[in-house]
Length: 407
Ligand SMILES: Nc1nc2c(c(=O)[nH]1)N[C@H]1C(S)=C(S)[C@@H](COP(=O)(O)OP(=O)(O)OC[C@H]3O[C@@H](n4cnc5c(N)ncnc54)[C@H](O)[C@@H]3O)O[C@H]1N2
Ligand code: MOO
Image (cartoon, rainbow, N blue to C red; front, side, top):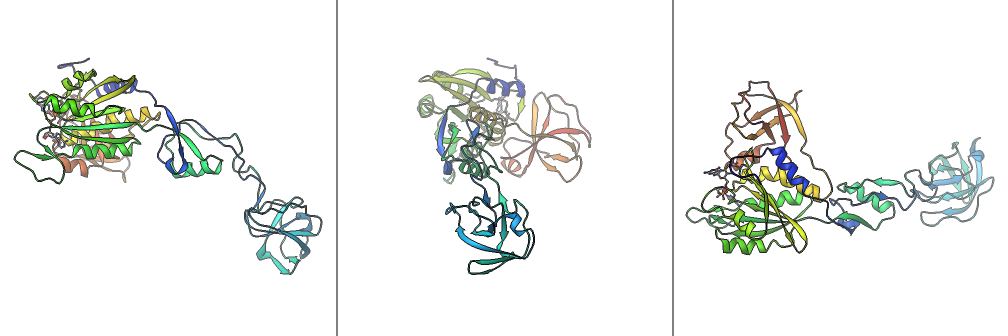
């Protein structure tokens, strides 16, 4: 465990977090519950699509040879609607009335659309030729039985669900949703909407964090607010039993009331690291504890709402991704500074800013004030400008790494 002044680099901290996490077990869910879940195995088609040669239009199934010279007179011998196939066979000079989705009758090899036909009882006159295969969707044209349609690890979209249903699956195997317990700590916190007493503030972190957790494909279990006492922390930590990750906010620093780490250690957690070379996010800690044979990862976020949210995006979202068996890298891009930046200190700085993608290369401005108490600037920002530790002052036009904020 790294303690005291040895601050871990952000990349190293992230690696250590991801290295100890592995994909959770899978479960089957119905198609209506599948969107947003992570596919636990490749999706293999059980069917050909279409399952039979099918008409793409309303009209008449014919033999292409019979309509090679027009006008052509044919006799309608039967009807083939969708789901009501004609089981006989079509001979020379014959046609079958067919509708979109109807199975192509044996003997037919083209569909003439009804707009090109004059009908009088069972006698029809075809006014346009139709080439072999015209308006027919051949069996298996789209996909075939045993084709791999979706790769394992995909976050299922609406279109994925559609193809799951089309390929004969009533349920899909998905990775179990990680359960993320979220614990707020601090004597000063009151639930949002409650009147503030002296020195109190609105406890916002759990709500922002729960939203990130849900967006990342996990289930949030909000544990409420623990007071700055071991008794209160012990009780709330116990309520996290069974959760895959326990995220705490606040009480991570060095103050007299920062009891979260000792309380977690009391509850059996082994700390892996504490303090990282990141701004905001210096007092971040990570560890894990084993309960009833399963591992619970413990991520301690700083209390400042901006720090908590940025650290959740940088560390918690990839950790959830790892439990789900999918990669969720931050999409880093390079932009140039539209305003100069002062020299950076000893921590990698994740600066809130605004990105202008309409220029090439994109231009970015980092806000002047980066105090981690300023919630409105996080809300307004659309990116984080990442400045490595100890970078000297940078003039306008300098290239910088930028992470788009998608939270
Ligand atoms: N002497 C030092 N003081 C501090 C250091 C340091 O290295 N030496 N680090 C600073 C840094 S950096 C940070 S970040 C903060 C984080 O400290 P904690 O994680 O212990 O957070 P708290 O003190 O509990 O809270 C900080 C701030 O955030 C507010 N807060 C807490 N929880 C919530 C919540 N759920 N919703 C909204 N706001 C919350 C809290 O009221 C405080 O204002 O420590 C520095 N100090
Ligand atoms: O690292 Mo703290 O999160 O800057 O305010």
